[in-house]
Amino acid sequence: MRQKSRLKALRIIAAFAVFLLLSQISITLAGPDEDSCNNAPQLTAVSGDDVLELIRDHEDGPILLNIWATWCQPCREEMPELLRLNEEYQDAGLRLILVSCDFTRHSDKAAEFLGSLGVTFETYIKEQSDNEFVNQIDPDWTGALPYSVLIDTDGNVLKTWEGKLNFAEVNALLRQLD
Image (cartoon, rainbow, N blue to C red; front, side, top):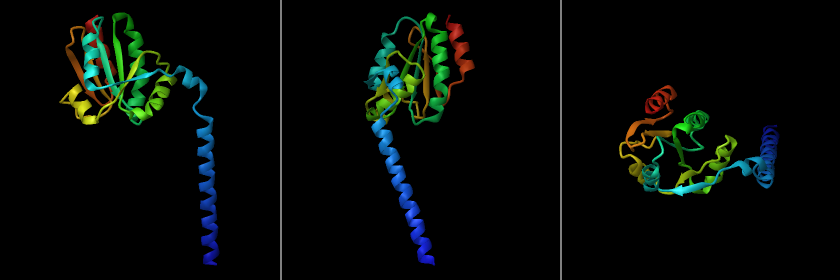
């Protein structure tokens, strides 16, 4: 009797494994949703030094640098609010620089996520080791994500945040710059 129960359990497990395998194959063959591919922005690979150069080259207004990843739940949660800030302060010259810390081989995931939120501006993905990138951006940064930096028009760092942004604080700082 015990042998029959064990065989039945093994058959159920095997059937479930086959089901999962076939499901994964059909998802892979179907590919990503066509609309999300059409709307997905292209991500440019950057080093920490490249990001600092982007900041130095921007003279039109303040910069909000946000370093995030698709696997980081707080990053995903705050992204719509970041995009709202970007839209609200765009006329004041705010530039939102988004840098994904996903592996470059997963850039399609990051692009798809951003595309699903309507991002059409140029975005970036880090192409170097975590330690090198973190130390080039800010030696005081622990590497925790999300990580954001608000920079004024003169290139001065006004505030850094490890973890989710305090949007009331960001709004207050941006209003002071107007």
